[in-house]
Structures are given as C-alpha cells and as structure tokens.
Image (cartoon, rainbow, N blue to C red; front, side):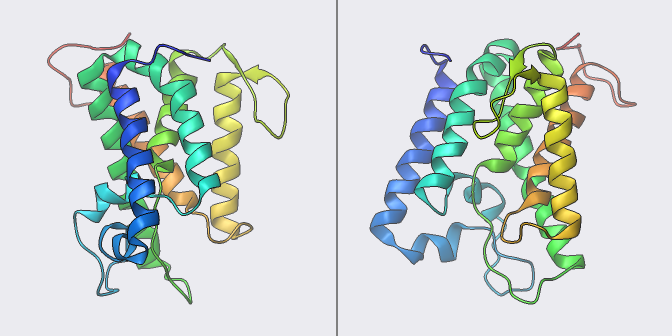
Length: 205
C-alpha cells in the first residue's frame, strides 16, 4: 500500500472526494447536468463524457473506487510519468463513457438513468497494472486469495463481460468498466509501438 502518492494520483483523489462532497450539498442538481445521460434522453451533454467520471452514487461507490486509485494509481503514475498518466487516466474514462453510450443506444433498457463514477478509469488502471506488473500478487477484498495480477485482471474482465451480457447484476455499468480497460489496452499497445499507427518514440517496452 503506497503512502507517498505522486501528484496526479493525489490530485485525482482530492478532486473525486471534493465533487462527492459537493454532491451532498447540491443534491440532484449536479446529477442532472454532469452525470452521463443516454443519447436521446434530452439530458445528454458532451461534457458529461468527462464530468461523470468525478461523480459517485454512494459512499461505498466512492470508497471502493478511491481505494483502487490509491492502491494502483501511484505505481502506474511513476511508470508512465505525470503527463502520460494523466492522458492515460482520461483516455480510459472517455472510452468508458463512449462505450456505455453506444451500448445504451443500441440496446436501450426499459428504464434509464445516469451513469456516474470513476470506475471506467479505475478499470483502466487495473488493466495497466496487470500488463506492467503481471506477476505482482493481488486479491479481492471479499475473496482474499492472492493471484498474479495478469490472472486477476483477466478473470475480472471476463466476469464483467459475463455480467454485462447476461444482465446478472443490473444497475452496474459493466460495459463502461470494459470500455476503460479497452481504452487502456489500446493506448498501452500504441505506446509500445505495436499498432499500425506508431508513436514518435516508444514509451513502454
């Protein structure tokens, strides 16, 4: 568990907590304007693709997301550097929102509500940790069985896909989680020079 957090991770933690406290003061007003509403709902605004990633629906929701940011963010930021870590975090958050919007557009539920939370970006960090530190041991809080990070991430992604397709756990944005992982995977592979579009210089081995 890290105790000396680098600046971007620390500032993201502060920003998320500050927005959550502001939600408690302003009630549903922030939800209406800054959570991610489905296309065609009459409430969608393009800025919500980013702003929704700083909002949370409950104390449990923000606690789990911030715990994961605290645990994995520092290691990833030190590997990427502050600038690239910031880019990575927001790319994951944006792709998460875009995939969630696409799924809701093509497969609209009988009832809809807003999507909110940093989970898309957090799942991107989890994906990065699994790719960069594949043999580090991690485990779920409710399933305290240590396993290699690569296996943990693979099983978690498979579970999210299964729950998203089957609807076993409604009310959770499983495809936003997968979108965050997808955005992270593409960006890491780009930085490694493994896509048809090459970076000016490889940032990762």
